[in-house]
Each structure stands twice: as structure tokens, then as C-alpha cells.
Image 1 (cartoon, helix red, strand yellow):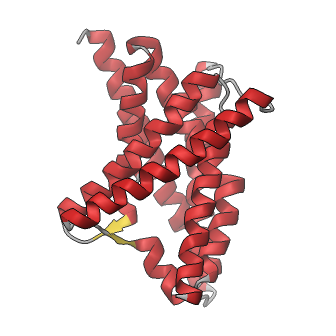
Image 2 (tube, rainbow, N blue to C red; image 1 turned 180 degrees about the vertical axis):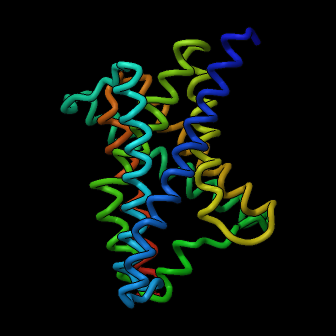
Length: 234
């Protein structure tokens, strides 16, 4: 790898780490006065608020990079062909998630889930998080990982390596979503990385960030709706 390539990789990693740290700080900034006012830190409104604050931290890093480096991120109203990719991409992402989850269960590598733990206590958390996924999580994460990081890696290494690199960082960012021993946590994050590769491939294929945003949002909503129904009616 050339010196320029090494700098590009380090920049992508640094952006991911910075986004994570800013998100943590933003969440803490939200939680401190909330706790001081006597609100229950484990309640759904507080947890959703902290999650939203963290996502705004993600946005600050992604958007800040776009403005600082004058990066062009293609985003447009989806065309009819784009919508076909949204439909097919959503089906593919869900199918891959179901298939890999089954494999992990056979291998005994299913991790605990922070989201599931909260949702079991209060199923409305799943619904609130689904709404947040549509309006904030999917757009912000796709801007950072596909629009910024994948775009940066593509310019140096080409689309395939860019998809792989951004997806690995996307999976790594989600390590904190899981609980348990190291192997299941890594397995869970690896599954997320594969799903990220689906999002990345859709972005490269369509050249429109709106496509992976929509697929990401629908994917999250479907999984959260299934979790809600499983807890309420299971």
C-alpha cells in the first residue's frame, strides 16, 4: 500500500473513531441535565433522546467533513429504477440478515443485544427507535459511512475495496450494540458489516445516497417491528 493509500485508510478509521467519540459526548451532554432533573435514565424517552443526541454527533462529523473538504455526495429524489433497487435491496438485506442469524444460532454465536434488552422491558422502545431510524439514524449513518467514508476510500482504492472498508468500519461502530463474550459480539458486528456491504453496493450501483438511506431505514423498521411483535404477542 502506498503512503497515500495508508493515509486514506487512517483517515477513514479516524473519522469513524471521531464520530463514535462525538456521539458518546453528545449522549452524555444530553443525559447529565436529564438525570439532574430527576428523569429515569432507563426510560424510553430518555434513551431515545440520548440516541438522537448521539446520532446528531454522527451528523456533525459527517456533515462537517463534507463542508470542510467540499465533498460532493450525490443525493436526489429516487427515480423509478432507484425504487426497484430499494425494493430488491431491502429484500436482499433482510434475507442475508435472516440467513446469517440462523448460521450464528447454529454455531452458538448469537450475541446479546442492548436494544433487545431495553425493548423487553418496554416494547414501545422498539417503535420509538423505528421512527428515529427513519428520520435520523439511517440518513446520518449512510451520510457518514457511504457518502463520506466509502466515497473517500473509492477515490483511492476503487469501489470494491471502498465497499469492503466502509462496511468493516460500519460493523465496528456497532460493536457496542451487543453484549456477551467476545466471539458472539464480533459475530454480531460482522453480520452488520455484511449488511453494510449491501448498502454500499446499492450506493455504488445507483450513485444516489437516497437509495441506501431508504433501504437502511426500511430494514431497521422491519426488524424493530418484528421485535416489538415478538415481545408483545410472543
